[in-house]
Image 1 (cartoon, rainbow, N blue to C red):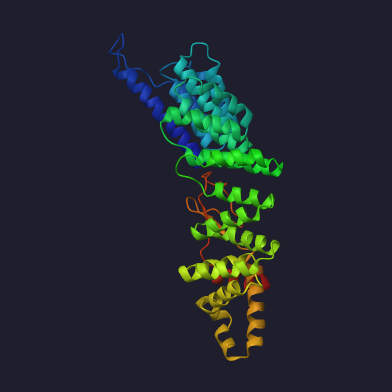
Image 2 (image 1 turned 120 degrees about the vertical axis):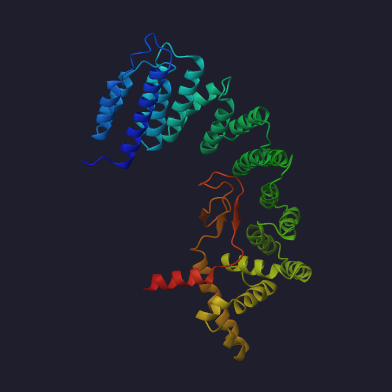
Length: 402
């Protein structure tokens, strides 16, 4: 069996460490300077196991080979780290547990071993075990900051937002940096959980806490608008949703459907028409945003929105290559409306199958807005597409028909 590249990497690591140990012994302080220190034969045995793909035997050999002290402990840590990076977490755990079990271990080295073991557990998805160690390290070790950062990540995965808030507040003090945006989302998560329970009083208290400090998240405004909507406070709901619209924030794609819904509930579509026309007169560039939102959310039956969509489709060059929309203007009005409605409906169906949001940090795409990117774990980094990628949508349609 030919050794793999990772095996050579592991073997090279230990050969380097062995050579370094030999050099230290050769040129360091010795009782007899005339007798060179021999290369440790145990290292060569371990390397032989590795080169023959006998990883388990090599692991057992290296664990038993040397006593953990200041001269050898880094070898163990390097091996454990390498196993974790290779995805062999069980082996990494054994190595770090073996280090911790040594009675002669210095306190600083013990903390390092616990920190490495906690990262092993985290990699293995054993969040409860990792949490216990990180809590210990966050109490007074040199890994306090790293421990609190890890705890915030764990509590985010477990959706234990109160513990996440507590850890982030401690982290702000120790690390000397602001986590305002991160904490704001923790409070918004608690607010939204309260809304599900219909505990609107608690929800509003959490939203208020989310709006302290800078930078502020528009999620707080959006959550307040939802609470007003759910409690039939239509006036306040529209005020908050329109604030998002007037500020031209990235949440327009989420706010416009809610505005339409509330106006329909209140039988005030005429007011909506007036407000949107005033907005577009002030800022004509909003037409494309409204049209995009209308298409992906299948919003229709409102003349000002329908006009935006029609103009959007007629001026889209890629769409024109597939569908001769420009020729529709030469036909009668009824035929035009029917044809545009058909195209619009088809686009809405196709667009619903394509990603609508993309993370600005890592590029992760999703069909709905995610406040925390599941890939890079950053908060509020997703943004909606500014336009429908018609070429992608149509190619997707053609491919599926074949």
